[in-house]
Length: 388
Image (cartoon, rainbow, N blue to C red; front, side, top):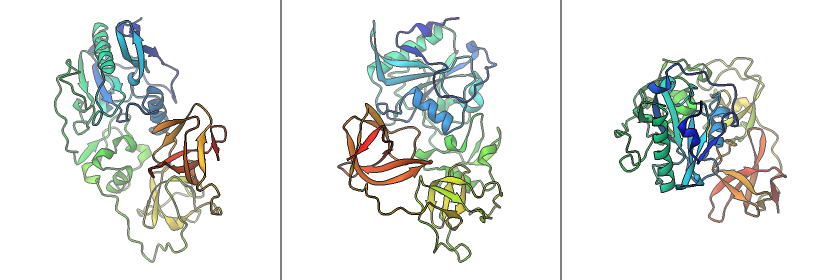
């Protein structure tokens, strides 16, 4: 069956072509009884990572989801010329009959639509507004959804500032209510939740805070209905004082993004729990650094700095002060040491001054700065960049 919305000239069908790991189950709720759930991505709309393909990679590689969480993604940076004028591109990312992860326990009766952009700071342009209106009208004709709601209007998400649009001017079809800005003290785990997507960084809550406020929680075994501390977690991750029992005199200098090895002799996490033997002796990525301890990304656990080892320090880098330039059409750059969800791209011939070479998630990366002293991170791959 072909739906009306599939015939929109600005729509591109990318089902089965985006990053995935497994598949979503079929929804049980008839489409006619579903609700159209509107989101915004919180990524600046002009950046390289502000599109369906990047969202899919982030949802799969970082959140561990089967695929991108939205059914439809509107990309303001990609303009399609249509008979009615310029329109923001629509990516058909998941079959509308699939129960994707986008509104927790309401996933089965929600059709997730994301408008790329951070509308706390950006405005919707006319081409995007027109696409939104035409898509919503087509979905109504197809009887895909009986109503429209923003993310924060679904149960359990009243504290989320998503999505932030000028509804009166743009989403005339939404009966919008102002978001509840207070973060609740506790939160009930919903379908698809991970500590990564629960952490509400704009409210100052981090994954490390959640771990500190919920001792004994296993990030890999969250259960639907499980209640965790949320608002109470803000600021819970405070550096633990270094005591004689955990000396750091001979501890290695550790940096965020660095690959380390957890010593086989390590017996206790910095939070007091016993470290299983199958966890020690392996390599991990440093996610955060505090006094006398580090947070390891792959196991989301704090360990003492004295219990980790790093690669032998290299002599002072001969790369410092040199320039790195792109030698291909475009190369991603990041504002923190990572590989997912790039902050933007630089093009052939453009480049920055190298500060040092680091290892991020097992691969070489260059820490660089621009003429204004702003810090970024780029790949060191010789097929993408050159050092001069």
